[in-house]
Amino acid sequence: MTTAIQANATPGYLVASDFDQTLSFNDSGYVLSEMLGISDFQKKVEGLSRSNLVHQGAEFAYLLRHDPEFRSVRREHLVEAGKRVRLKDDVKIFAEVLRGNLEGNSFRFFVISASPREVVQSALEGIVPPDHVNSHDGHTIAVSETKSIGRVAQRTVLSENALSVLVPILEDILRWDAHQIRELFTSYGLALHDWDKIRTDWLTFHKTPTRFVVNRTAAPLPAAARHK
Image 1: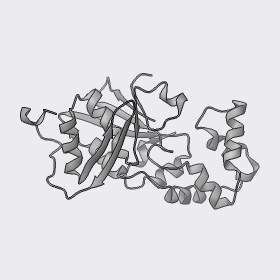
Image 2 (image 1 turned 45 degrees about the vertical axis):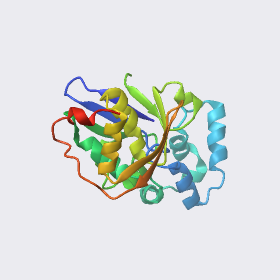
Image 3 (image 1 turned 135 degrees about the vertical axis):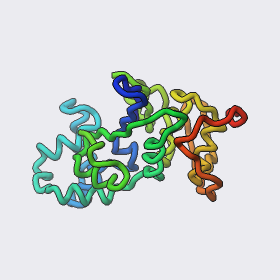
């Protein structure tokens, strides 16, 4: 899940994103379990979910603290697990776009996760600064069809590309139209091939030759570029 919050103290927006299955495809707990030869991770997670001992999404952190099979885990194991986690496509570009200046709007990007800090920092090394990884109000975006998450999210976006999360931010917060959004993706060599908006945004990207580079500190797009 990703949330965009308008900051009060400084102009701009704070974008806070989860890690597992939001910026990555799989749960980092599965990766670490495979490394350690623990075969029943899913069963352990389901058991914790039924018992209501922990909040949804925090099962991995609980197991690291309390499960005997995870007692052998050391920091180096967590770092290695982070390197093995499969990230969604173009997470680096996603972070780069948010570091830019979109029509005078600034964004600060943070990752907030129940997964161990060492795992997340290792997985996002060179993409997100380590101090922006941290273990209300806002524009909440779900990136899965999980009902418990979808009920509290203003938008649901499903895609294998991390840039898909930008669509609700650009549409709902910055009021960009479809043409502006497609042009931004094209500037990074990505063609927005499919965009199904019946109930949930389903997006498919294809790599294309970069036609131009957007100056993200430039003035707003001309009026002629704002029509759909």
